Image 1 (cartoon, rainbow, N blue to C red):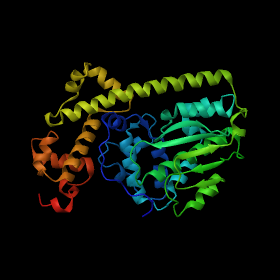
Image 2: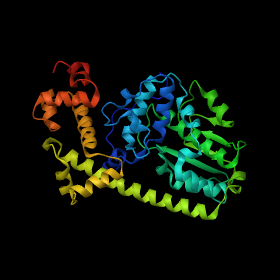
Image 3: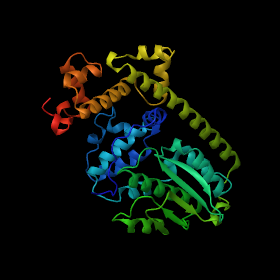
Image 4: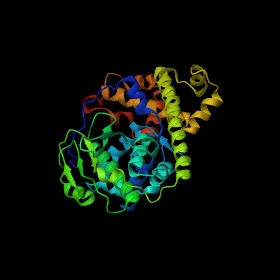
Length: 358
């Protein structure tokens, strides 16, 4: 097995966390680089996207937004097909200051590296980061960037950490020069077979099996002034970051509300106008809000139906026709056709072996 952690048993997340993980507000920054590497190696990307309501070209589109759950599902599928064990390090290392967009500009124009680091952590969601970040000031004056997985850790955790810390290292070296290095890197998972690649890239002590996933930065770097400091540009870029962060939060609420109403009324096959009415919005206004998130109602609806159908197929208690009814299809044949369009295969193929006769 390429990655050292086993996938966990299914756990039901709290409603607020479930809504957050299913809201389509994350830029496809990481997936775009991952797909580029796959293209170069002749690996098909389309199978990663089955049932997601996404096409290959949308991964490269700046306006596309996906949910955390979609991103992790795509990464999990990708890891099964990519031949390089250290793919997370490769994807992170291939990013640049430009990958971080306006957040990279805001950091580049700050007065000190410490100020840049604080802004990067505060506004990290707008860059497409797939882990939650926080800042910690250590007793000896050093600082630490701590990364928390947004859901129960599974086989994607090494990839997520590799991508995050490698891309962060690229960003730091863009700000301070190639001489920058961490004091140490700490990771919660066990040492993988390719650990030598970590030490080659980071050029510092790397501890596996640690209490936290964190990158420790020596205090000498924190007060270092950036040669690219520009007060006016810094203010302008930071204002845009704040607006994007606020917009991200608003969009997250709208998409999560649509998904919640779809799940409540899935059997009734709700249409956009029905959901808009439930949310006290006009159909036009709701469509505009979704478009601002890079979303289309039909794609969200299909994704929710796919997720529910897969859940019921895995449970094995209902027949195919009954599952179709549960997700809004009165005709089992229509459900089978739709399911194959969503996932690339028939419903029966998705059942556990003991239930495939149903």
